[in-house]
Length: 293
Image (cartoon, rainbow, N blue to C red; front, side):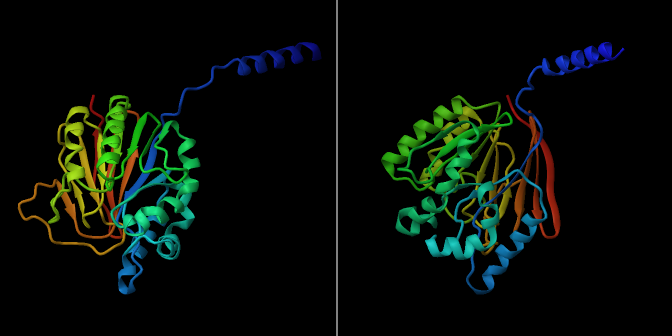
């Protein structure tokens, strides 16, 4: 009897050992995205304090920071004493891009040095591609995660480097997964009063040709959701803590717009995503969209 029982147990164990390995997880991926963040100059600090409270309430897999992480100049001291004051605990859950304020200090060197160790975070992702920056954090990079392609660009590059980035960007769009997110500081679609930058205009032909699912921007200090343009949804999230700008084009065409501090929450699935704008007042503009073919 004991012999038969032992044989049965061995058969069960062998069955479990022979089970196939599961494919890459297609579970939901939760992301918080926002830019134009930490300003610790007097009463202005109340903005980043508000956003920090919102973030602390959320469960998420990682954050995307859309440039202008700290004001006024992106110095080493400002990054450590102001940005780090609120987001140091999340540093290794952040995928950032530089804004124009990062480049105010030594052509962005403090920013690229501050996030240097986050290169290891990129290398943990599938199909990662890091543009070499002499060992510093990359100016642009990409990876795949949970069936989505993530592409991060630098809005501030000079002519030759900008052309190199455009060539690299087109290759990434050609090879992207069905669902994709492009993060770049300067917006192409905005109802803000600031003029659209040339580096943003140069991306438009590639957006039209390859139709990424989502484009994320900062720079203008309000929240804006566009209607889909050639299959692409544009979100402007310059509401991460610095002063909100309520001056916008009165003839603008935004689907939704808001003038308060907050973050964009994205819940990514295999073929769709849900989004909402989170403020201290609650959740706004919640909706679900499908990834286009």
